[in-house]
Length: 264
Image (cartoon, rainbow, N blue to C red):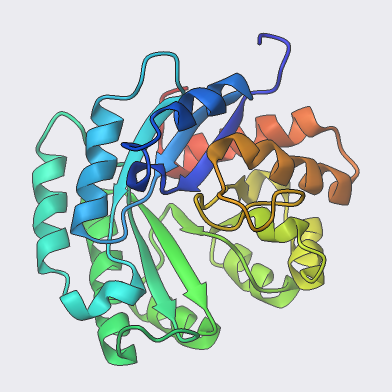
């Protein structure tokens, strides 16, 4: 595998289907994925992510974890997640980020006021612990940036699963954020996302699967896995007219910087 590019999946939820399918990470390693970040969405999934990062499978990629409360779960309040984060930071298996957190005004599974409150609280947690902030944003760009402006953008902030266009990407870049592209960039109806990816500098770009969701073409509609992240990278390479290895190397390096990783 030495002659293959080393890819990095900066955002996935494999901890939530790892127990029934532990081979998912071994399949990722076979496709050249060197590392993955397992993202927490509430206390339970965050604990699962931390456990997997603390005991990854032999022969699989390096595994990292975040602790966070998704805007869908904002009604639960931040207390349980904040306590888990404090405990994890004092343990030997520290998380690399806070989130995913943010605003989702498309589904509104939690009231907007609760979403805004727990988002602001998680910005503060990321700053306090010097961790990356992982943001989820859907149909709420203006309020998202209002809160970031009021609270201050953490030094290392990732806008995950980018669904906007060039204007929204420019706002992220101007705020010093990393922009992460998922399998959506391969979808036929995602012209705005592809235009944003084309204009986004490689050194400010991450790639992800968001697995088990949003499988890239030609697997759209099936369960997503980290092994498919090279398909996202291949699409980015085609859009930018560069070699796939350049995208693998650049996005891998950007992930290391975003999450302050010493390896892989």
